Image 1 (tube, rainbow, N blue to C red):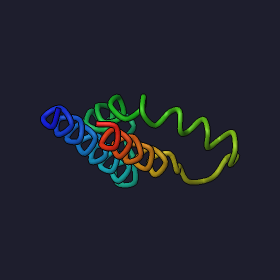
Image 2 (image 1 turned 180 degrees about the vertical axis):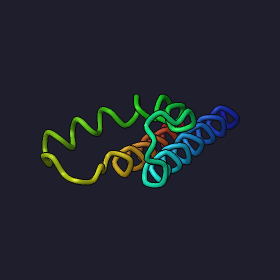
Image 3 (image 1 turned 45 degrees about the vertical axis):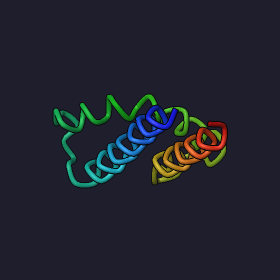
Image 4 (image 1 turned 60 degrees about the horizontal axis):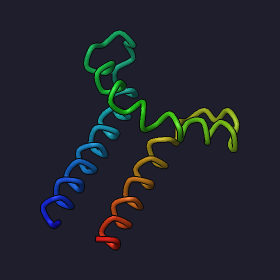
Length: 86
């Protein structure tokens, strides 16, 4: 079971890093057609989109996207819950 938890933990860390890289890249690279940004967006979009919907529903149209913060926070909560269960 320890090996499975390590694999899941590694997956979560990689996902968090990709979210941060995509977030920083969106500030630096303004070209929406950039292949690297499209690739990163294709990975992060399924994770971030639910949090974007929640943000827009409860916080309105903010000038900044807080969904990466919410997503990373949720990933860390899920990871801790998994460690508590197993």
